[in-house]
Length: 341
Ligand code: UFG
Image (cartoon, rainbow, N blue to C red; front, side, top):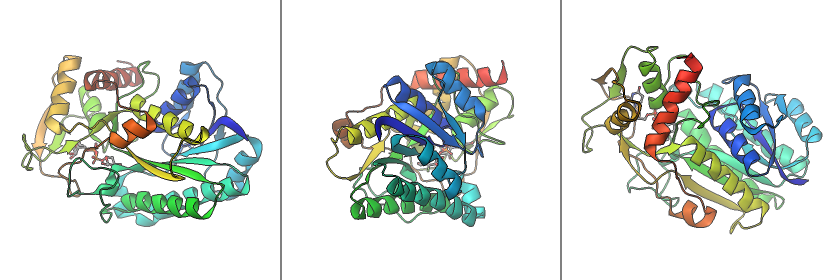
C-alpha cells in the first residue's frame, strides 16, 4: 500500500477540506470520499485551487458498504481519516436513530474495509464533547469521559471504543482519536471555510452571518454562568492548526513513532475564551459592531471546557499557532467571500 496516500472521508466538509489541503502541502496524496449530504463540491474545488492538485473525489456514502468497498479497490491508500458523520447536537437528540445508524455504520464499514483490504492507519475525528461537564479543568486525555447527553456525543464515545477494541484485536490496525475542541476560522486564502446549511448552530458562523446581515441579531446564550463575565468558556482552535494535527497524527503512525497502537490526543489551544471575549475579538479585528443580545442559557451547554494540550505538544510535536485575532479575521474574510460582499 502507498504509505503516503490518505483517504479522507468527509473531505468535502469544513474540517475535511482543510485537512486535505494540509496533507497535500505536507507531501501526501489524498483521495476524498464524501456523499455531499452536508457539503458541496465547492469544498473539493477549493482544495484543488489552493493546492493546484487535481485531487480525486468519489461521491459515495460510507454507509453503503458495497459502494464504499469500490473506493478501497480503486485507490492505493494505507491510511484513512474518517470525518464523514452527522454533527448537529440538537438534531441528534430529536432523531437519535439517524445519528446511530449513520455515524456508527459508516465507521464500522471503514474498519471492516480497512481489514479486508489490508490498510493500516486510521484517524478518527472525536470531540471534546466526550468530557461533558468535567470535574477538572483543563481536561487531559486521562480526564474521565462523562455519560453523553446527546446521541451525537454518544456516537463519538462509541466510535472511540470501537476503534480501541478493534486495534486491540486486529494487529494490522493502528488508530488515533483526535478530540477536537471548538474548530473555528477559515483558510487564509478564503477559498474554503465553514458553510452551514440553514440557521447556524455554532457560535462563529452565527457571528459572521450576523455581521453579513443574514441574521438579525446574535443571541448570547447565558450571562449568568459562574465565570468571570458570566458567559461560557471554550477552547477555540483554528481550523488550519486543527488540520495540521491530522498530518502529525498520520505521520506518527506512518513513521511508526506511535507508542501505543491506539492513542488519544486533545486538539485545542489550551486557552479558555468566553463568548463575550470572542465577540469582542471579532468586532475589534474586523473593525465592526455586531448586533447581539443576551438570551437564556441553551439546554445542554457545559459551563466550561478547555484542553490540556501537553500530550499533543510533546508526542505529536504539534501545537496551535495561529493567533485568535487572525482566526477571527479569516472567519469574516470567508463569510465575505461566500456572500460576495
Ligand atoms: N453560543 C451562543 N450563541 C449562539 C451559538 C453558540 O451564545 O448562537 C455559545 C454557546 O452557548 C457556547 C459557545 O457559544 O457557550 C460555543 O457554542 P458552539 O455551539 O459553537 O459550540 P459547542 O461548544 O456547543 O459545541 C462544539 C461543537 C460540538 C462539540 C463540542 C465539544 O459544535 O460538536 O463543541 O466541546 F461536541
